[in-house]
Amino acid sequence: MFQVNDYLVYGNEGVCRVDGIRSLSFEGSGEKLYYVLVPFGKARAQIFVPTEGSPVSKMRPVMTKKEVDAAIDAVAGKKLPWIEDRKRRTALFRTIRAEAKCENLLLMLGCLYGRRRELAALGKKLAFSDSDALLFGETIIHGEFSFALGIACDEVPSYIRSRLERAAAQRVKIQRIE
Image 1 (cartoon, rainbow, N blue to C red):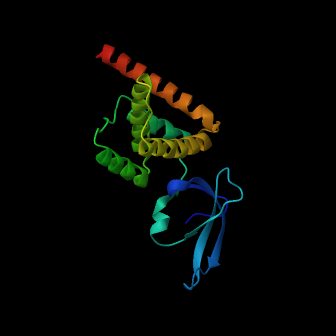
Image 2 (cartoon, rainbow, N blue to C red):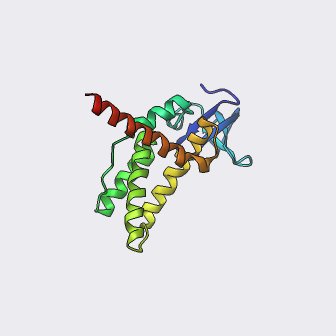
Image 3 (spheres, one colour):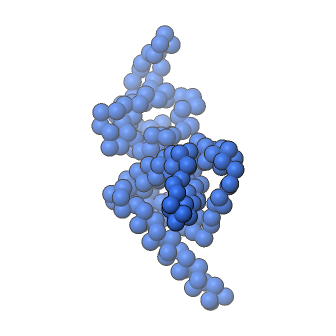
């Protein structure tokens, strides 16, 4: 069970602080205990999440710097291929968003950044559903990484790139030794 002032990641909201744990009743349901969450950077917003049941499964502790680095290292050299069929691609991105696993979100972002570059060279833009997936991924990844690393959100992309470049250089070194 999370405690007041703990930081956690909650589903699509990203990093939140537990502002309180209260007994509340909504729309005729009996009283239940709820976490009162305040999304990081949104001091006026509140989210009420039952302390028991399926919504709690969408809550997890915020990653540490070591875990962030391990997640970035885990995707180094990997690529999510572009799926031409929009419906299949949207379904895959929807699944990745729902699971909110860091490594899969990073792979999705890499795929979308690559596609955006390809389209920009042709004077085109991403489809709305792809832009929406990109924004979602950036919001979740940048928010959590920013919090875990103690850096500004706009510094996260360069941190990820730098870490990926180091991982690639390390792989080259290992291949030369072998």
